[in-house]
Image (cartoon, rainbow over the protein chains, first blue to last red):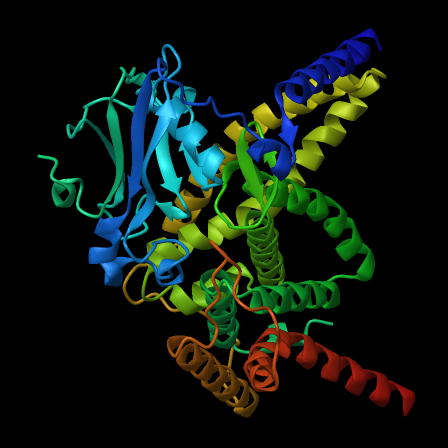
Length: 177
Length: 293
């Protein structure tokens, strides 16, 4: 019987750990974020989210995504916007803050879930990897160059310009060689 | 009780191919629901209400587990219910989880019913000539779980009489159970090899070897064959035209059933409830005949 009590205690501990590790927020609560105001001496970056490649390959896109709701008419999910850069911010931090502020849907794979130890962006605004053929997905460029490491590892500097681009051809259609 | 099993093995085989392919490859919620209901009713007719209830209690747990797992890992969908660790949990993912687990359970129950009807002699009769090795392997695989269950019960009972399970503690009992299971694995491997050797010694698969079988193809089989093939072809045709298409992400397609749709679903119902109807008809006939004595 003592063994049983031990096992029950262990399971209870496990459940307690799982519950303490989860954070449940309502939709309003999640989107209620504070954005730093841009003052004269604050460091800033620019970010834009661009799905023009999906517009060019409209027929490859899954039929349920062929709507203005997911790919806007001009292809830009988010026009270039200026945000305050906090110290040690990575590209991912900025993207998360931006999508939260603008209430844009975004799904990512956490840094501990893949072999690269870096965050991977799976989908933005319901537009996912492989949504427009097997070579499609999200890429990002900083100051016009495509870095060869993940969004969670790129630390930004003042005045950087971030562009998130949807590609349908492994980056060849968005000028990445 | 099992009048559908008296049909020709080919009918049984082709029926299951049709029903499983409709259940597995069409993601339409109405089809999945009808298929699940059909499989449950048919399984109940083959066994009993009590067996079905016992099974349902277990599969309800599996159902809930699978339905909850999907929204935890898939965050697609427009209607956000709440945020879990900064990831959206969406209504669409919940609905998809419910229907995908419905599909899995329907497939499980069709297969359970199938193992009652399609005995290994029927399977070997169908495929023994054309693909002897594969049909032997498949019939052994189909028989594997039931015989495994039987044997584990035997070992369990023997251990009980030896006084192994006397401890009150649940943990001890679980550990003993694992030990029995361990011994079962080597038993099943050995058993499979022995079975293969036995079949080889009997000359299975050799040229010129004949098989005795009592299956004949008669009018009844022809009638059912024509019905299921026609219904299946019409369903496939309608599906090709997009009649059964349904998307879950990013927004659910229209749920509402209009007058035109009813015909589409009656076709599916015809296919899914056919064995149950046959059982029902035979049961009624039997009751009627008995009442006249």
